[in-house]
Length: 285
Ligand SMILES: Nc1ncnc2c1ncn2[C@@H]1O[C@H](COP(=O)(O)OP(=O)(O)OP(=O)(O)O)[C@@H](O)[C@H]1O
Figure (tube, rainbow, N blue to C red):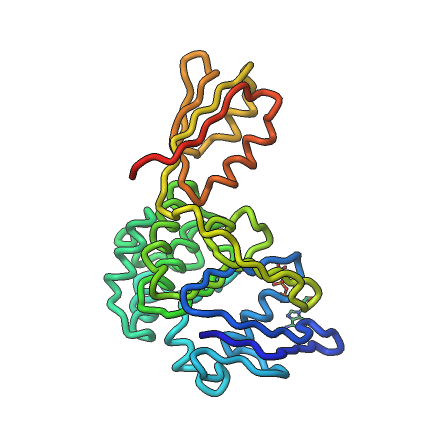
């Protein structure tokens, strides 16, 4: 579905992509990870047909630079930095919907599921929304259409846990009909969403790993943490998670979205000395 064949890109004299060859098939969900400056965004920009480069890129056999309209019509893209658009939200939705031939109401419906009530902000300039609101709207625009390829740069970074859970559900609904590339600095943020991890460093692919596809994206885990003693910092760290404590603040119970399992355990691991007992069990949805 997506092919990079010996792709190289040089800015001035710096070689930013250094012979990237990858084949990404239908149904693959790729975490594109790597440190700052590794070349992730540049690779994505080549896929979107924005840069000239050496080597070849193809989506369904089409070169994105010479078939930009057709290729962009098949890609839902959530950029790393929201564009500084002054356009009002309602107009932005209508404009985006008309570009990719979808019904604006599909975008409204996804935004609503993510907790963004678009009807109340139709006349507000996009640039004046909060970071999380912008991200929800960009995700809604990317998912509110029949895109065969979803390309997302740190898509869940600004979302609260509730919106993240809904975002994972929305992606789960697209597993059979879309290929996903999710760029991130941190594997723990995206690990449960993906079935392949590609790590870049200094313009090269340094790791390309198929990963176990065991955690269902829609699973909910019942969670229970028993503390040996209470620390206010622990309560603060769990602020925003769907978890609450007993009267003595020692027993914490709640539910965790399946794909958030690793992120949650990462937080708990900072308080290992406090934890007397911990359980996470898959519950029926
Ligand atoms: N338009 C440009 N002109 C010159 N250099 C550029 C340009 N775009 C990117 N670079 C350089 O290319 C290298 C790779 O940048 P890129 O944005 O692709 O990395 P990245 O892996 O996405 O990093 P981050 O995680 O910080 O977003 C960096 O050294 C960057 O400075």
